[in-house]
Length: 146
Length: 105
Image (cartoon, rainbow over the protein chains, first blue to last red):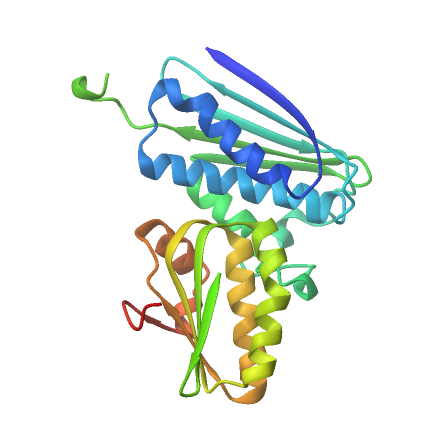
């Protein structure tokens, strides 16, 4: 088992830092090109949600990112904010539903995460924050890849 | 991002990571260019785009709505396999055209 934790400020430029850091951490276990794309996208969606929804665009909130992988190549990513929380998770999960259409949000973030993840959980408390938990099983490595 | 206007068509060519920050920086420029030229058609080319997320989909949907007001048409061009998967999830192709290739800068 291997793990890492990042804590960063909800500044927009930190989203690229977050997704590239996760991929860099996972390099030793050789994710495929498609897996890298999916992981980057899921992290981007989760972190942007913390910034835009959790902290309503205010760039002084904390975002905590935990990543771990085990010997079976199961990856667990947890992304947490301490912001406003989600009133109705079922509604938020609906494809194309967004509370921020004026900001040109598509309402696809949670749909994309739950599609790419093998297991996807979201817990939220109003005025306390939201945690997203993503599990992703990587492909079995062939002998040539090892 | 590059753009060009030829015979009523406004072309946008995006490249690199089209993430939330990038879209925030490009959005107003694109809105203003569409306002300025009032094109019959806008073509968004994603051939050189290495990363896109739901922010990009939101941007495309918003430009579609912007063009609807003036009766313009929007065409999405040259998505990679991974980017295509993402766009498909949103059902965007039920309302918008998709094409491969076309005029290049």
